[in-house]
Image (cartoon, rainbow, N blue to C red; front, side, top):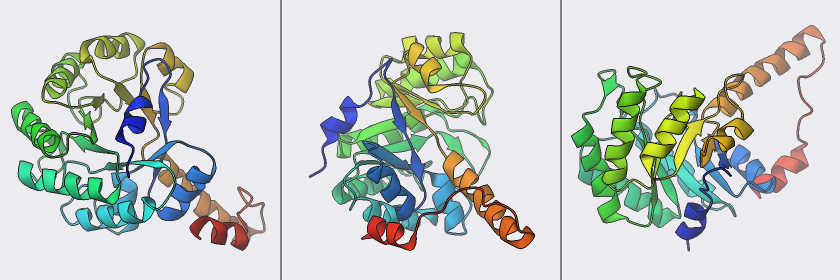
Length: 259
């Protein structure tokens, strides 16, 4: 049985949950083996691995399929469902209910609309959040706003949206791209619920975000993007007679992970 309370309790302002994101079972199993208490999926990584653009409706099947395999692991799981693969509140609630039945403890639901390249209407997004929480109240709903990635980069807008999403029932809010200390402190103070930020290399640190009262730090698609580069460097090293960029796991190591 999914321990929803245990996942919720990992979100402590000032002692943030470092949440690593995976795109396949193997990396998820490795993270679980290393003792991470919770892992997440990355919508970009899952979509790209399936040969799909991020957040398109057809990505729903790959997202659910990966969740089913990851749920076998002894680790708490939250799933990135992008914009929900639908604009219909009932269909988004159906998806989250299905994921909860699999054993998923949380979901990440964003307000960026890929189709028209803009932020969703606040009231429409609140309706999605409300529908999910009415249907599956125990699931930790992390409401993402893309004010600082695809929106107007306005902290005023971020504050308006995190307050609205908290009022609609969100359990946490996620503002990827937010980094300036004064802006982080302002959003943390305004939200009233746990704040999740994205780790951006060279811009923020885990310790720095902890000092600002952040409760969760995600690495997003970073491991997937690094993995692509590392795989390419490995093949180039073989071709050019160079050193491998990292020591690989053995066949037995992988067999134990997936076994």
